[in-house]
Structures are given as structure tokens and as C-alpha cells.
Length: 142
Image (tube, rainbow, N blue to C red):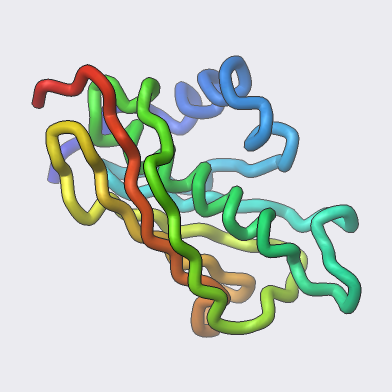
């Protein structure tokens, strides 16, 4: 298995300087390997909808940040990658104090990375959302 091209510390430094939204949310990289990432987000009151569900935009945002980490771990120019598309399927009500987003690059194209993400509120329960998406990777030649 290949080694990730970025460390957790480097990812957090870069996103702290360049991507304010993930930092504002408090998303933290829990694990990183080549082409995979696990993001953790502690749920704050402002992330909740009436009734206590985590809002859809928050679920989608943590999935997007997790995909970005997975792409950065596998592409030399991953820091320049941008979201090309995302489709989210909500599978059940997202309720809990923490959500995890497990992202994986499933196709390593020269210029497009195809990804999938499973979002959980309980590691022992089925996912609350399934996301597929892609990142455009500018200037990648390998």
C-alpha cells in the first residue's frame, strides 16, 4: 500500500490557512491513508435543525472536507483540487453528538478523482448518508 502524500498535521495546517469553512466547523482529521480519510465533527447547537437533526448542509460539508483530505493524500497537486460534483443520499435521520465521514477515492484519474463517503453518527450503526462526488485535480500529470 502506498503512503499518503500528506500528513494529518500538514492537512490541518493547509486547511487552517486556505479553507476557513472546515476550520470554522471544527472538522478534524481522525485518520488518513493513501486515498482515504476519516473526518470527525463534534456537533454544535447551531448545526441542528428543529427536532435535533444535524442539518443537511453540515453533513454535506463534512463529507466534502473528508473527500478533499482523501484527494490530497493521493495526488501531488491535491491541494489545488476543487469539488467538481457531489450527490448526497440521506439514509436516516442524523442525530448525535459527533459525526464521522469516511471518504475514499474509488477511481484515480489523471485529472478527476472519483470519491465516495459514508457518514455515521454511531460507528456501530448503519450510515446516515452516502455521498458520491468528484474532485478536479488541476495540473496533475501522474
